[in-house]
Image 1 (tube, rainbow, N blue to C red):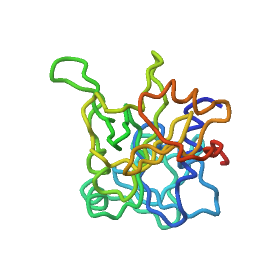
Image 2 (image 1 turned 90 degrees about the vertical axis):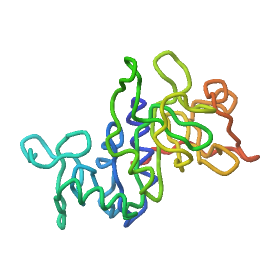
Image 3 (image 1 turned 135 degrees about the horizontal axis):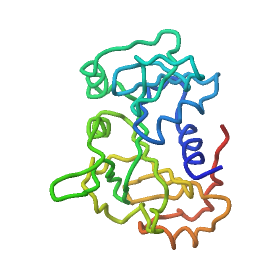
Image 4 (image 1 turned 90 degrees about the horizontal axis):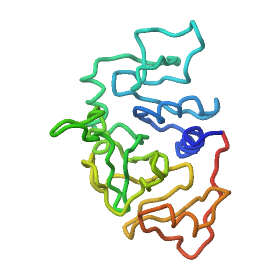
Length: 223
């Protein structure tokens, strides 16, 4: 199982029965494929759909319905399709219980940077999308990202270096190595990959974190 799959499966375990959940671009859209049938999660996508399920099989897709990554979705009984203005009214109106967002960087203050990598002066990729509205409108923000970049540098930082999407908005950080809760005192290590020690995690993590005098739980990927 690769790092992305581990993160997706772990993120799915954060969701509670009955929640309205927005899935952002990138890894988050995969969470819809990891929800057990007995759990009732109402997924929302910013481009205008409510109550969808896993990715449809080949030939069963509808080109008029898609998630935030423009991938096909399965509409469940009771689903609705609407314009983007209505979608953002749902988000801005505080009707989303949780959002799972991919991140370029997160930090120990609960800040998230997920929209802008400068590639020329005054020009950025990939663009804001709905992230700024989501971090302000959702009751719970779960940030998912790989622990280190391709050069081996930590993406869980003391302070974000890229343009910020939202300050102090992240509640939970999930990487393939660990799960952190953001608390008023900083990051609390809740779960740790089974192949690592706390000391090894500290070496690859720029941010400071606490273990609160206990042994962190084992990283879960039950689904």
